[in-house]
Image (cartoon, rainbow, N blue to C red; front, side):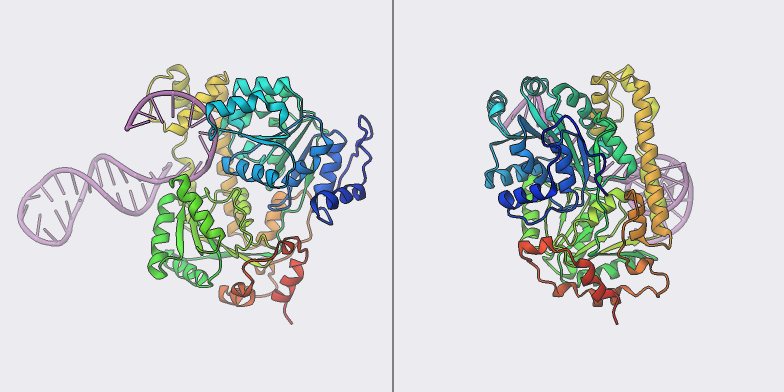
Length: 501
DNA sequence: CGCTTTTGCCGTATGGCAAAAGCGGTGCCATACT
């Protein structure tokens, strides 16, 4: 977690001190101190190096490129996975008057898009999706002008979405080499060693790239692994949790499950819950998000569609009613709790029957070597492929990859998904500390841990009721002032709560 | 992959049985329509 290999040549900014940076931070942004990782990443980038930053959710990743703006010649290009994320971040830059900003996506009319492209030099920041970056006209324009900084936001998408969902993510490295940015900054909240290597390799970043990995531990989130015998028991315990009357997010595996669980909750307490999945229209999704953010809706039952870019500070309870696919998803999803630094609870329910059900799901509906080959040989042959599968294969074909290589890529990805799931399952059914395991999985070096009951074998594990009684989630003020987000003592709060007398 | 649920048929009971179906989720972009 320390900055190493300070660059010594090729830059007039190479020797900027943390103190100088902090002065600038206070002057320009009004913060007294950097969050962990911000200063070393800025120093590396100012000295002309490329960088990869793995920083926890809500630790000020966008501040990095905002801060760098006056130190950089040329355009700052930010690659973002979601239109809503682009809109949020562009809006923030506009409100803070940090420079002229453009968003380049399908929400714009053809004329608007052409205008932005024509006047590209006049902007300070441009936000776009990897798909847009693939367009020849966009690439050509970016090659003509100076790109001072290329930012890849949510860079883990390269690894998690690239191979079998959004193949444009796999082409970022090639495009990067063509537009030749002066520096590149990749950012994410979750990346273990394999994902870090995936990101560096796919972006074609050099081995000298500065990598900063912060601890993934979120000490104010109490991790609870709850093994249940059957659906009835899971439902009853969920009712008890929902009875805490705090902002709650419930993750389920399917759209149908989200709707059914919402309906059952609604029968118990009408109006408290809504479901959220990608089958809803954009306006419905926005509406639910807004209600939830404004505390007018207490419970959201969601698929993995809910999360990225949603910044609700006072989420107190995240329930995994069904298991996520791997550690990465789990960490991302529980990470949405307690962003205000106040105590929060993450409960994950595990049933013995989950193992078979979920491994079967992963083994099913896969593209077989036969169907991939057939697609390449006879692209017009309408096989039993869904639109997503067709799109993926089409993209690989357009990238002029031979069928054999596509088969290998998709085979490896599928095997990896299965291994990730098995690994996650092993951990969920072991008796060692979940927090310890999360940190082992993500961190390069052991972090100082803040243990929850699950790991402390010397004491009997308290019941869920006891945990709830200690946490007193409902007593926590729902709307903390902005300053509370910089609070650095959640561990002390927890110690009072858990390590009593 | 193999287990559960639904369907279809029997032929007339409100079952019985076998065969067939069903079984994740994430979002850009385009283009063609009202």
